[in-house]
Amino acid sequence: MKCGGKSERQERMMDLTVEIEGDITTLVEALQRFTSTETLDGENKYHCVRCKSYEKAKKKLTVSEAPNVLTVALKRFQSGKFGKLNKPIQFPEILNLAPFMSGTSDKSPIYRLYGVVVHLDTMNAAFSGHYVCYVKNIQNRWFKVDDSVPAVVDAIVVL
Image (cartoon, rainbow, N blue to C red; front, side, top):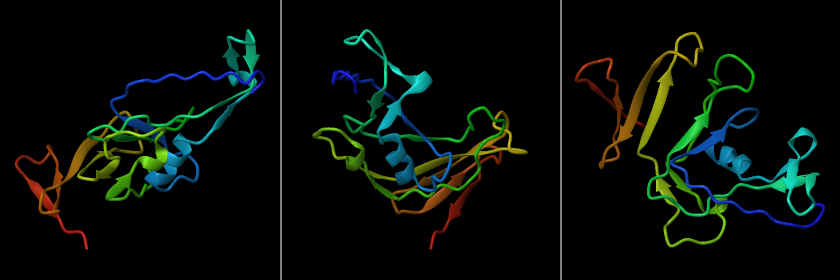
């Protein structure tokens, strides 16, 4: 912000981890926050190599290339607090990633939801619990997969 210099860095990632603290209630809102411009100031100032000092700066994250399979993790652990955020987060069955991308890509950024992993905890404890998975088959039927119940798959009917 002082000298007008720009620093860009690309990182490969296996999944996208988004914050859900505060007033976030949907995956789209979490992605909007993830890609919003952040001001680095105070103790978070950026070290500018052109100015040779720590300066106030703006930072923005975007997705530069759409992956074949998109995995999104919700950051349910609270900063500096014990426990996890157990609030519900709505997510669409079809997600267009294009508004959260920079540039263009030959890959389509449209994703169809076909699986959700859920951590079932005891006493709001992030360090213990059990994972179950909800998966959708080719006929658009949802199933609950739970390895604590041997050889049982529950069909879920969504109206």
